[in-house]
Length: 298
Image (tube, rainbow, N blue to C red; front, side, top):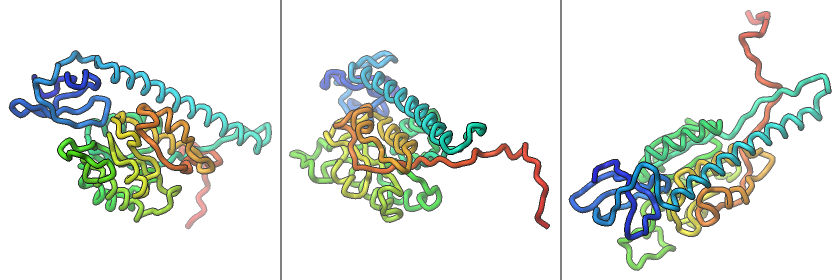
Protein backbone atom coordinates (compact mmCIF):
# COMPACT_ATOMS: atom_id res chain seq x y z
CA UNK A 1 0.00 0.00 0.00
CA UNK A 2 1.28 3.44 -0.96
CA UNK A 3 0.44 7.08 -0.32
CA UNK A 4 -2.27 8.14 -2.78
CA UNK A 5 -3.95 4.75 -2.98
CA UNK A 6 -7.73 4.59 -2.76
CA UNK A 7 -9.00 2.41 0.08
CA UNK A 8 -12.08 1.48 2.14
CA UNK A 9 -12.28 0.24 5.73
CA UNK A 10 -13.33 -3.38 6.30
CA UNK A 11 -14.58 -2.64 9.82
CA UNK A 12 -17.04 -0.04 8.46
CA UNK A 13 -18.28 -2.21 5.62
CA UNK A 14 -16.48 -0.14 2.99
CA UNK A 15 -19.03 2.68 3.35
CA UNK A 16 -16.67 5.56 2.48
CA UNK A 17 -13.81 5.78 -0.02
CA UNK A 18 -10.56 7.26 1.30
CA UNK A 19 -7.20 8.27 -0.09
CA UNK A 20 -4.07 7.29 1.87
CA UNK A 21 -2.37 10.48 3.08
CA UNK A 22 0.36 8.99 5.26
CA UNK A 23 1.87 5.67 6.36
CA UNK A 24 3.52 4.80 9.66
CA UNK A 25 4.54 1.14 10.14
CA UNK A 26 1.18 -0.64 10.60
CA UNK A 27 -1.07 2.46 10.58
CA UNK A 28 -2.29 4.83 7.88
CA UNK A 29 -3.70 8.36 7.79
CA UNK A 30 -6.65 8.40 5.42
CA UNK A 31 -8.84 11.21 4.02
CA UNK A 32 -12.31 10.91 2.53
CA UNK A 33 -12.51 11.57 -1.20
CA UNK A 34 -16.07 12.89 -1.00
CA UNK A 35 -16.67 13.41 2.73
CA UNK A 36 -14.83 15.79 5.06
CA UNK A 37 -13.31 13.00 7.14
CA UNK A 38 -9.67 12.67 8.24
CA UNK A 39 -8.92 9.51 10.18
CA UNK A 40 -6.26 6.97 11.08
CA UNK A 41 -6.65 3.25 10.56
CA UNK A 42 -4.71 0.01 10.96
CA UNK A 43 -3.32 -0.96 7.58
CA UNK A 44 -4.79 -4.44 7.93
CA UNK A 45 -8.28 -2.89 8.12
CA UNK A 46 -7.89 -1.26 4.69
CA UNK A 47 -8.77 -2.70 1.31
CA UNK A 48 -7.37 -1.08 -1.81
CA UNK A 49 -10.03 -0.27 -4.43
CA UNK A 50 -9.95 0.74 -8.12
CA UNK A 51 -9.97 4.36 -9.20
CA UNK A 52 -13.75 4.43 -9.49
CA UNK A 53 -15.35 4.64 -6.01
CA UNK A 54 -17.09 1.39 -5.15
CA UNK A 55 -19.01 2.12 -1.95
CA UNK A 56 -22.76 2.63 -2.18
CA UNK A 57 -22.52 5.71 0.05
CA UNK A 58 -19.97 7.35 -2.26
CA UNK A 59 -21.96 6.51 -5.40
CA UNK A 60 -25.06 7.98 -3.78
CA UNK A 61 -23.11 11.14 -2.93
CA UNK A 62 -22.05 11.49 -6.58
CA UNK A 63 -25.67 11.22 -7.71
CA UNK A 64 -26.91 13.73 -5.13
CA UNK A 65 -24.08 16.14 -5.95
CA UNK A 66 -25.07 16.10 -9.64
CA UNK A 67 -28.73 16.67 -8.74
CA UNK A 68 -27.87 19.56 -6.43
CA UNK A 69 -25.65 21.22 -9.04
CA UNK A 70 -28.38 20.88 -11.66
CA UNK A 71 -30.92 22.38 -9.28
CA UNK A 72 -28.69 25.37 -8.52
CA UNK A 73 -28.13 26.00 -12.23
CA UNK A 74 -31.86 25.73 -12.89
CA UNK A 75 -32.53 28.21 -10.07
CA UNK A 76 -30.07 30.64 -11.66
CA UNK A 77 -31.85 30.49 -15.03
CA UNK A 78 -35.23 30.99 -13.36
CA UNK A 79 -33.89 33.92 -11.40
CA UNK A 80 -32.50 35.58 -14.55
CA UNK A 81 -35.90 35.26 -16.18
CA UNK A 82 -37.64 36.75 -13.12
CA UNK A 83 -35.22 39.68 -13.19
CA UNK A 84 -35.97 40.30 -16.85
CA UNK A 85 -39.74 40.04 -16.39
CA UNK A 86 -39.63 42.41 -13.41
CA UNK A 87 -37.72 45.02 -15.37
CA UNK A 88 -40.02 44.63 -18.39
CA UNK A 89 -42.90 45.85 -16.26
CA UNK A 90 -41.01 49.07 -15.49
CA UNK A 91 -39.64 49.80 -18.95
CA UNK A 92 -41.55 50.67 -22.10
CA UNK A 93 -42.26 48.02 -24.68
CA UNK A 94 -39.70 49.60 -27.03
CA UNK A 95 -36.88 49.32 -24.53
CA UNK A 96 -35.03 46.12 -23.76
CA UNK A 97 -34.44 45.92 -20.00
CA UNK A 98 -30.75 45.92 -19.20
CA UNK A 99 -29.36 45.16 -15.78
CA UNK A 100 -26.29 43.83 -14.04
CA UNK A 101 -25.98 41.30 -11.22
CA UNK A 102 -24.16 41.56 -7.90
CA UNK A 103 -24.17 38.13 -6.25
CA UNK A 104 -22.85 37.90 -2.72
CA UNK A 105 -19.07 37.59 -2.41
CA UNK A 106 -17.68 34.56 -0.57
CA UNK A 107 -14.56 34.25 1.57
CA UNK A 108 -13.88 30.52 1.95
CA UNK A 109 -11.43 29.25 4.59
CA UNK A 110 -10.68 25.54 4.32
CA UNK A 111 -8.50 23.27 6.43
CA UNK A 112 -7.91 20.95 3.48
CA UNK A 113 -6.14 22.10 0.28
CA UNK A 114 -7.74 19.46 -1.95
CA UNK A 115 -11.27 20.27 -0.79
CA UNK A 116 -10.49 23.97 -1.20
CA UNK A 117 -9.50 23.37 -4.82
CA UNK A 118 -12.73 21.46 -5.48
CA UNK A 119 -14.72 24.22 -3.77
CA UNK A 120 -13.13 27.01 -5.79
CA UNK A 121 -13.78 25.10 -9.02
CA UNK A 122 -17.45 24.81 -8.08
CA UNK A 123 -17.74 28.51 -7.20
CA UNK A 124 -16.32 29.31 -10.63
CA UNK A 125 -18.71 26.91 -12.32
CA UNK A 126 -21.66 28.53 -10.52
CA UNK A 127 -20.32 32.07 -11.18
CA UNK A 128 -20.13 32.88 -7.49
CA UNK A 129 -17.45 35.52 -6.74
CA UNK A 130 -15.18 33.89 -4.19
CA UNK A 131 -11.75 34.06 -2.58
CA UNK A 132 -10.31 30.97 -0.96
CA UNK A 133 -7.59 30.37 1.61
CA UNK A 134 -6.09 27.10 2.82
CA UNK A 135 -5.74 27.64 6.56
CA UNK A 136 -5.21 25.13 9.36
CA UNK A 137 -8.29 25.09 11.58
CA UNK A 138 -6.34 26.39 14.58
CA UNK A 139 -5.30 29.52 12.62
CA UNK A 140 -8.70 30.40 11.17
CA UNK A 141 -9.65 32.95 13.84
CA UNK A 142 -6.42 34.94 13.35
CA UNK A 143 -6.74 34.68 9.56
CA UNK A 144 -10.29 36.04 9.59
CA UNK A 145 -9.24 38.93 11.83
CA UNK A 146 -6.73 39.88 9.12
CA UNK A 147 -8.76 39.11 5.99
CA UNK A 148 -12.28 40.32 6.77
CA UNK A 149 -11.49 44.09 6.55
CA UNK A 150 -9.49 43.44 3.39
CA UNK A 151 -11.85 41.15 1.47
CA UNK A 152 -15.14 42.53 2.87
CA UNK A 153 -17.20 39.47 1.95
CA UNK A 154 -20.95 39.01 2.18
CA UNK A 155 -20.58 35.34 3.05
CA UNK A 156 -17.89 33.52 5.05
CA UNK A 157 -17.34 29.76 4.86
CA UNK A 158 -15.35 28.21 7.71
CA UNK A 159 -14.71 24.52 7.15
CA UNK A 160 -12.11 21.76 7.09
CA UNK A 161 -11.87 18.62 9.19
CA UNK A 162 -13.70 17.77 12.40
CA UNK A 163 -15.17 14.80 14.20
CA UNK A 164 -16.06 13.31 17.56
CA UNK A 165 -12.82 12.16 19.22
CA UNK A 166 -12.50 8.43 19.83
CA UNK A 167 -9.94 9.12 22.57
CA UNK A 168 -12.58 10.75 24.80
CA UNK A 169 -14.50 7.81 26.23
CA UNK A 170 -17.17 8.12 27.28
CA UNK A 171 -17.61 11.16 25.03
CA UNK A 172 -19.94 14.04 25.87
CA UNK A 173 -21.56 15.47 22.75
CA UNK A 174 -22.42 18.66 24.66
CA UNK A 175 -18.72 19.38 25.34
CA UNK A 176 -16.53 21.10 22.77
CA UNK A 177 -13.66 19.05 24.17
CA UNK A 178 -15.16 15.96 22.56
CA UNK A 179 -14.59 17.35 19.04
CA UNK A 180 -11.44 17.61 16.93
CA UNK A 181 -11.89 21.18 15.63
CA UNK A 182 -15.29 22.55 16.69
CA UNK A 183 -13.61 24.82 19.23
CA UNK A 184 -11.46 26.31 16.46
CA UNK A 185 -14.54 26.89 14.31
CA UNK A 186 -16.30 28.58 17.26
CA UNK A 187 -13.31 30.92 17.75
CA UNK A 188 -13.34 31.84 14.05
CA UNK A 189 -17.09 32.54 14.09
CA UNK A 190 -16.68 34.79 17.13
CA UNK A 191 -14.04 36.85 15.31
CA UNK A 192 -16.35 37.19 12.31
CA UNK A 193 -19.23 38.30 14.52
CA UNK A 194 -17.03 40.90 16.19
CA UNK A 195 -16.40 42.25 12.69
CA UNK A 196 -20.12 42.19 11.74
CA UNK A 197 -22.73 41.27 14.33
CA UNK A 198 -25.79 41.44 12.03
CA UNK A 199 -26.72 37.99 10.73
CA UNK A 200 -28.11 39.41 7.47
CA UNK A 201 -25.10 41.61 6.77
CA UNK A 202 -22.59 38.75 7.00
CA UNK A 203 -23.72 35.18 6.44
CA UNK A 204 -21.51 32.60 8.18
CA UNK A 205 -21.46 28.95 7.14
CA UNK A 206 -19.34 26.82 9.45
CA UNK A 207 -18.43 23.27 10.35
CA UNK A 208 -17.35 19.95 8.92
CA UNK A 209 -18.01 16.28 9.67
CA UNK A 210 -19.71 15.69 13.04
CA UNK A 211 -19.18 19.31 14.16
CA UNK A 212 -20.89 20.69 17.28
CA UNK A 213 -23.89 22.17 15.45
CA UNK A 214 -25.43 23.89 18.48
CA UNK A 215 -22.17 25.53 19.59
CA UNK A 216 -21.51 26.90 16.10
CA UNK A 217 -24.98 28.46 15.95
CA UNK A 218 -24.63 29.94 19.46
CA UNK A 219 -21.33 31.50 18.39
CA UNK A 220 -23.12 33.29 15.53
CA UNK A 221 -23.18 31.02 12.48
CA UNK A 222 -26.19 31.27 10.16
CA UNK A 223 -25.72 27.71 8.89
CA UNK A 224 -23.69 24.93 10.42
CA UNK A 225 -23.00 21.21 10.52
CA UNK A 226 -23.81 18.67 11.79
CA UNK A 227 -27.18 18.35 13.58
CA UNK A 228 -27.06 14.55 13.45
CA UNK A 229 -23.28 14.34 13.99
CA UNK A 230 -22.90 12.66 10.61
CA UNK A 231 -20.29 12.92 7.87
CA UNK A 232 -20.97 15.82 5.52
CA UNK A 233 -20.06 15.97 1.86
CA UNK A 234 -16.97 18.00 1.04
CA UNK A 235 -18.96 20.45 -1.08
CA UNK A 236 -22.03 20.97 1.14
CA UNK A 237 -20.72 24.31 2.51
CA UNK A 238 -20.23 25.51 -1.08
CA UNK A 239 -23.80 24.69 -2.06
CA UNK A 240 -25.17 26.61 0.93
CA UNK A 241 -22.90 29.57 0.14
CA UNK A 242 -24.00 29.56 -3.50
CA UNK A 243 -27.64 29.51 -2.42
CA UNK A 244 -27.06 32.54 -0.17
CA UNK A 245 -25.01 34.32 -2.84
CA UNK A 246 -27.82 34.16 -5.41
CA UNK A 247 -30.80 34.71 -3.10
CA UNK A 248 -32.12 38.27 -3.31
CA UNK A 249 -31.53 40.66 -0.41
CA UNK A 250 -35.33 41.02 -0.38
CA UNK A 251 -35.82 37.30 0.34
CA UNK A 252 -34.72 34.77 2.92
CA UNK A 253 -32.69 31.76 1.84
CA UNK A 254 -35.08 28.90 1.16
CA UNK A 255 -34.56 26.67 4.20
CA UNK A 256 -36.21 23.72 2.49
CA UNK A 257 -33.55 23.86 -0.23
CA UNK A 258 -30.75 24.03 2.34
CA UNK A 259 -32.09 21.25 4.53
CA UNK A 260 -33.22 18.81 1.86
CA UNK A 261 -31.14 19.55 -1.22
CA UNK A 262 -27.62 19.56 0.20
CA UNK A 263 -25.86 16.26 -0.36
CA UNK A 264 -25.77 15.31 3.33
CA UNK A 265 -29.40 16.29 3.95
CA UNK A 266 -31.20 17.52 7.04
CA UNK A 267 -28.92 15.68 9.48
CA UNK A 268 -25.82 17.17 7.85
CA UNK A 269 -26.58 20.92 7.66
CA UNK A 270 -29.01 23.22 9.45
CA UNK A 271 -29.40 26.88 10.26
CA UNK A 272 -31.57 29.92 10.91
CA UNK A 273 -33.58 32.21 8.64
CA UNK A 274 -31.20 34.43 6.72
CA UNK A 275 -31.62 37.01 3.97
CA UNK A 276 -29.76 36.55 0.71
CA UNK A 277 -26.92 38.68 -0.66
CA UNK A 278 -27.86 39.01 -4.35
CA UNK A 279 -28.60 42.44 -5.85
CA UNK A 280 -29.70 43.64 -9.28
CA UNK A 281 -28.48 46.97 -10.68
CA UNK A 282 -29.69 49.10 -13.59
CA UNK A 283 -28.92 50.10 -16.25
CA UNK A 284 -26.71 47.41 -17.73
CA UNK A 285 -22.98 48.09 -17.60
CA UNK A 286 -21.52 49.61 -20.75
CA UNK A 287 -18.56 48.46 -22.78
CA UNK A 288 -16.47 51.59 -22.14
CA UNK A 289 -14.37 51.01 -25.25
CA UNK A 290 -17.44 51.78 -27.40
CA UNK A 291 -18.46 55.03 -25.68
CA UNK A 292 -17.96 58.36 -27.47
CA UNK A 293 -17.15 60.83 -24.71
CA UNK A 294 -16.34 64.53 -24.89
CA UNK A 295 -13.94 65.21 -21.99
CA UNK A 296 -15.19 68.03 -19.77
CA UNK A 297 -12.61 68.23 -16.99
CA UNK A 298 -9.63 70.58 -17.17
